Length: 327
View 1 (spheres, helix red, strand yellow):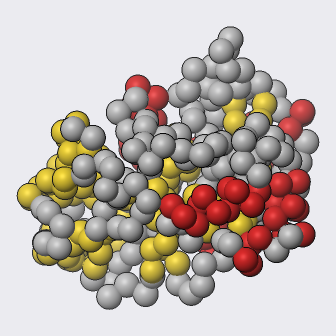
View 2: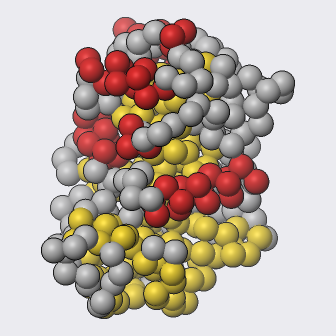
């Protein structure tokens, strides 16, 4: 039985302190109404929106709000979570992003760094929105956004980000499954949203949310809540005996848009690296038990596929991996 409780926490949001339409108070109110239990405010290259929240105690009156910045440059955007000072973004060049990250982390090694909308359209329509930095070592990052913005579940940029994430996992990198709403303004409740579920032992706090991401205790959901019970293992762990036993059931969420997307879960899938090693039909409130032996070295991860907004074979749930290691 897991000691963790998975909470919905948004990692990418904006107010009028950068290019958003929300006031800080309106953002927190909208996030609470949607069903989030916490939110990172990530205005472009500034923390002033969070200062506004803390000065007015909106984080205590409405919803817990955490430090974040969208580090915005000509060659890409980074989400720097947990940092009160994200350093000098003007020093960034095409070939020195790892040096910049080292400098940022030198003052706070517990921060989390994610690549925002890596495959969005860039120049000339949106300078810096496409990630172009030359990266030799992706261990500098904790995640890439697999989904960015709303109604993006089937977009080309989402499919490219998913494919790149799989490639990086195959190369041995430990990158969490996470999304970013990139929330700038009030939303249509019929729009799909990739919701980050973070596994936390204790209260919802900035430090516990960061710890969950660093440890890959995460999954993305468009609505279903997974109750994943693994034998002495959590998402993000290493295992050394090449087997895993557990069970999974799906619960309906209470998110604001839950009745608008017409979600129908259909298949539960387990991947061992790129290979499907387990597949079974699934629906809400149905419990599935599994025993997997003789796993290949690398990783396993879980997905739930189904129908959403009249589109079949959509990824409704994507979990972070569990890593299979040699003894």
